[in-house]
Length: 339
Image (cartoon, rainbow, N blue to C red; front, side, top):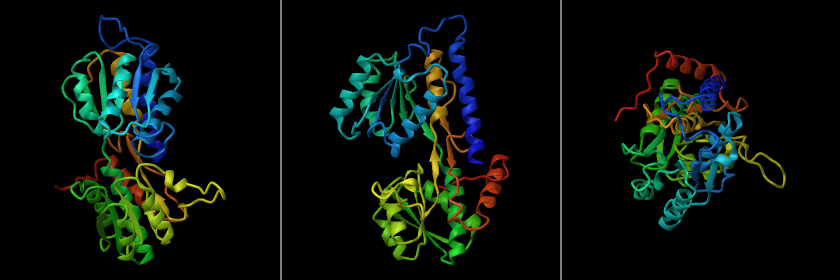
């Protein structure tokens, strides 16, 4: 199912990229910016070969765009790495560098860059700024967003079935912010759909993982990435559902080559921003104001669920997830988080 959803998204992306080499969607006006001369600036909080966090999601999307072979090459991207979003001077310097390079599109991979972007966007109206989880300003700042709700629901199904198998009807959820509970609620809905008697305990901060395990949670999930959660689960010989990437499931000991957390890994709800990046690049090439928001969820292929670790998940889990996904896709299942 995962592969099917991603193939749909990338086929759509490829078709859109092919139009770069043909003609503009702007009637009667030639396009000055093409895929041969577009300049795309990217501000990254981590090093550009990172595989986790917002930097990892952005780099993965860029690499997929490059791999499509439709005229957008590595030379089109100007990356500034290691820019701490909380360091105003560093962010300002990165933005100045990209503006001086005359980038047509500047991607801010973290919403924390928004304040500094707003300071320069008004003086650079010919540039478009594409900011993760930001709101559009109605001019030249556009937010791109991924709706993780459905993927977290399906993750809850996996966790709930594992808890039943273990006869330990309590699941732990590690949240980044106690005020932002949407994803924990979506996860709990999935757990309850799979196993009505299983309860979900929510705690904040990676350090809470150890306490949740001590409280009897044999399965952990979260709404953000932190290796401490994976390590806590593996050390305690319980299970975890990763978040954002499969990196921690594949982490190895550099000396021995041993998989560090695979024995605890169940699945991961994942991001894929490729389609949104393609949409933004296309809008710039076509010199056309975007007509739709840069956002999407499971059905659009912007988020998805990783392959299940068949060695660890409860029997029948894949079938249960497939059934839920099919019901969601055809409108029989609504996943709405109550406020």
